Amino acid sequence: MPPVIIQEGEMRLAELEGEREKILSEIGTLGDMRSGTISVRYQKCSYKGCECHKEGHRGHGPIYSFSVLREGKTRIKNYKLGPEFAKVEKEVENYRRFRESCHRD
Ligand SMILES: [Zn+2]
Image 1 (cartoon, rainbow, N blue to C red):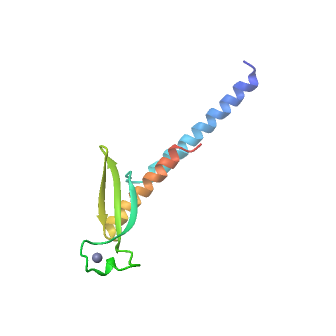
Image 2: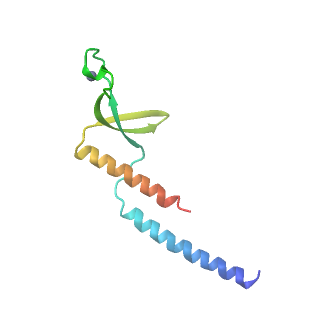
Image 3: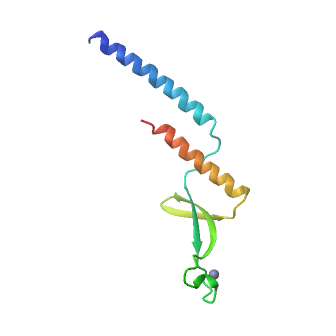
């Protein structure tokens, strides 16, 4: 094998090791994470006389929900704005960043 190729290979390895250190330190600072999706929805209720059934009404809300696929089923949990939802939002964001770190090209 020509020496120049070996040198390139070594350089690439050093780069990868540097990258690995960077990823590990990034992940180390992320904190709790969870996979899933945050969404904001508006919903019409079942009471026909309610204002939400009038034309142009987008429905009740905003309803903040967290959904995740578990054992083939989508589980959804609704939240009100507040510390509990903020925590979920942060954890989902952490997971997104974690995945980004792992799948970087
Ligand atoms: Zn309603």
